[in-house]
Length: 211
Image (cartoon, rainbow, N blue to C red; front, side, top):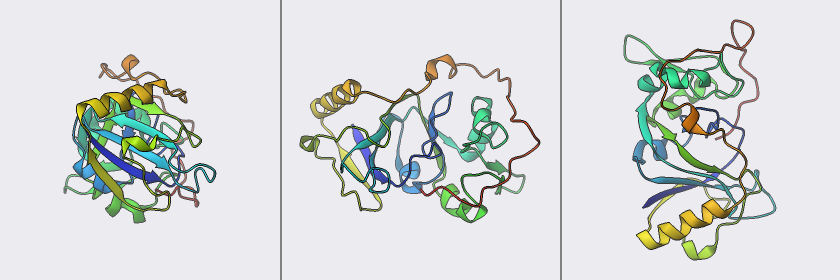
């Protein structure tokens, strides 16, 4: 099992986005989104701004089930609920255009200055199977060899043996979680009935979320 680990600066619900039908990572972490493949694990540790008390706390983890382009993500009706006019915490706000570029859509998460970094990751990762522990999640035992310095920027990649992965999966399953709406209720359906927020559009917030 290949594992991509990183230190998360904020867990505000946009990167990753925990809304149904599945957890998604569409913005921030371009290197992980560019490299991660189906079947690999992404795991985030709490940075000091997220959890100043405990280093090595796991905020969330997920097994990649799909890798989509931004065009596929925008056009897939399963993920219309993650667009700015459908939710207060979107991550689906890069609309493909006829000339092959993306049109940033006003949203409270990222301003247009983040577009090159976000779309530079090329892909959107989908996680049908994910664990969410929140800011004060459990510290990862040191013997897994995956811990990162909470002040570190960037990412790490490690390859686990089958036996170590089985132990890690057992550990993840045993920890108390913050509820994520079950993906199985939604992921198989492509007959979407959009739900739009009141009003025609959402103004972009002057306070952007950090990656």
